[in-house]
Image (cartoon, rainbow, N blue to C red):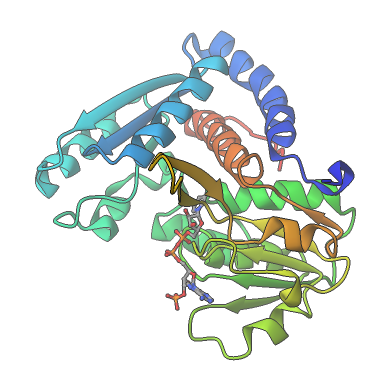
Length: 302
Ligand code: NDP
């Protein structure tokens, strides 16, 4: 049986954060006579990307944030996408721009990310925002690490001196996560596919964060007793019924939840952990962009 007190409920944390954001977006609407506005660009028909975009737009609508969805076909040229972004950069009624990744291979993600006005870069991937985060003075922090950080701050009163091991060094999760936690006085180790003795590193972690995309790879043999575990991984497992040939899909994280829950202090589930927080943080960043772009103060919630 699952020990519910050990579960870090990302869905609940996301609801709490959205409750704090809602009055801010309302206040903005009253003052500037329009809602904060998020533009989302989706190129192609990738099923997972379509679901992510749909969820982002639904959450925006529920939180007094206007969304503009721009759907483009898979054969959209890089030039066309750049032109769409330039139009949104200039549009004073648009506060945040998000390009759903991954993009088709003929489009350079690097070029597209760099074309977004940093003051509208609510994903926090632009080099200027990345640099500011690294310097400990961020404007926009990438949503997934920001969501993990929010939950860690709520779960632990004190982050100072904690040993954190992050598995995965992507620009979207691992690197910004490391920056945030380093600025919060953690001792951070970032590991990756070439790391030697991964288990040894992990077994020293007070906080273990996994973002590798390998289904249930991390079991209790990696875990320091009483550690806090954040599972960023989202992996779709195909389950096939041998008798009926019926296929089902199950979402699992990088962590073998059943094996790890007993040895850890607390753990985020998949689904219902990091995912909902990522979307809530996108709303946070959009409302923040709306205020900053009007030269208004925004008191950080996270
Ligand atoms: P990337 O593929 O960009 O990065 C994966 C990282 O994991 C790389 O640094 C890679 O190392 C490392 N890695 C891969 N295999 C191993 C291994 N066996 N041992 C140690 N390190 C390994 O992925 P993302 O960062 O974009 O995403 C990671 C996971 O998080 C995915 O499952 C993704 O779906 C999920 N995700 C979830 C989000 C959410 O909202 N919950 C948001 C974003 C991502 P190397 O650099 O050496 O190749």
